[in-house]
Image 1: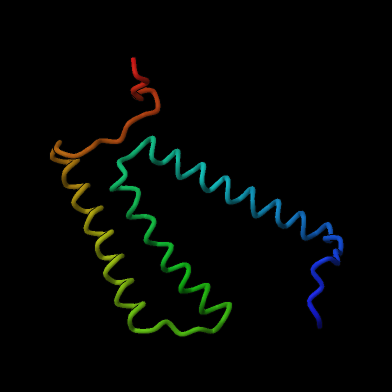
Image 2: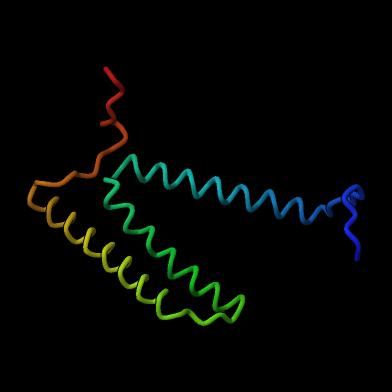
Length: 112
């Protein structure tokens, strides 16, 4: 099929609706991440971000039947292990009163 840059076909309604839903879910996800940073320390929140690696590997396997290589597994173990270690250290620090504690939204410094 030749490339036709100036030929436009209308987008079906279900595709537009799907794009809208994907954008809405993405915006909602970003909003929840921003809210998480209001209530907890960044070092605590970032460790939960490493779970995304597991989701991507599982999705890659399910969608494309791709087997993860040894380098991906080794890197994943390092990243997830460091995230668990950071979370464990932060939990210990907060328990001893040395770390950052969880704040409520009313405790924000508004520059006053």
